[in-house]
Amino acid sequence: MKIRDSFTLRTVRKKIIMVSKLAGALLILSYIISTKLEISPDIAFALWFVFVICIVLAVDFLMGHFISKPVIKLSQTARKMAGLDFSSACSVTSADEFGELSANLNVMAEKLQQTLANLEAANTQLEKEVEKERRLLEERRELADSLSHEMKTPIGVIRAFAEGLQDEADEEERQKYYKIIISETERMNGLITALLDLSALESGASELTPERFDLVELVEIVAGRLLLDIPDIDFELQYELPEHRSFVSADKKRMEQVLDNLIVNARKNVRPGGIVKLSLTKENGLLHFSVYNQGPAIPQENLQKIWTKFYRERNSTYSGSGLGLAIVSQILNMHGLPYGVENLSDGVQFYFSIPVVPSATA
Image 1 (cartoon, rainbow, N blue to C red):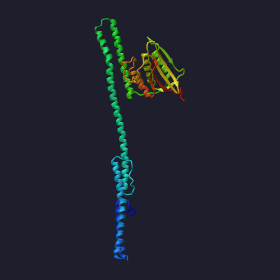
Image 2: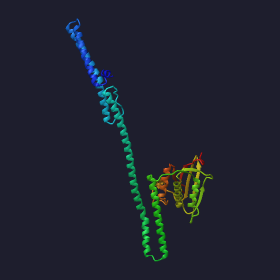
Image 3: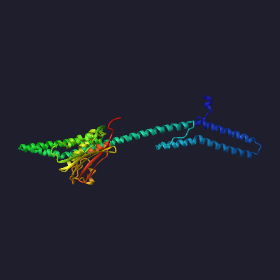
Image 4: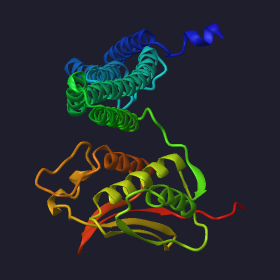
């Protein structure tokens, strides 16, 4: 085995020695042959010179094939790798040091490419985390700004009436002050709770928990709680609900929150003696909910702005729901449900749609 390996051309060194020995042998042989020919010495020398040139060209070709071309290919591949271009592998496949170097370069290129891909993925993830952290910081700053801005009015009212209590001797007036202070305190508590809830939804800290439930039943429960058996009702309630149960798949608590805010918004903005109408209809596999209140219209250019938190239109008689509609928008967006608002001839209608699911599992 070792004797056979000694005659193989598995190294560049052996290839060079073999070519040089072969060239030398051919030169000697050609010289001997040229001197034995029965021709004039000048012609014999010319023939030998031509043969020498042929041998030199052959040696040059073999050296180029064994050494120059592999080195050029290796150099080109290395240059591409230096420029982080790993699109093409080195094509040197000879069974010598150049072939081994080519294989090692290809393995290195593959590992470098994988490493760069991992680095890019890690960098992308890091950018997302940095962006998420930046958004959280912005949301915290916005939350603090919003709270400080919205708390000014109720805190000012509480302070004013608390100072008034110190000098007020009339017990009836004092009780009135107490009620106002309690009312403003409840208002602050509700505002803070709603704002924290909205921030949790926007930041992803609060996730949806879908479940299957009857939307018709939920609408009846919420409407009964908010529109019936309450004092000082000064509007006419109309409703259109399916006779049969209609099931949907969504976060029930969040959808109840949506219904709460939309119905309260309609109740707040219905004109005295006007109509509040609830509608839930089924069409093409969808349940379409809408709540209409007879009352002032929303300026057309502001129809989309009312979904932003703390939006208020100074020149409009329509009273927005502050954080309520922003929470509605966020919840419906998280569910991927279409929703909107439109001005009708004598009022405003809010609506959304949700797919119906089978009433019984298979």
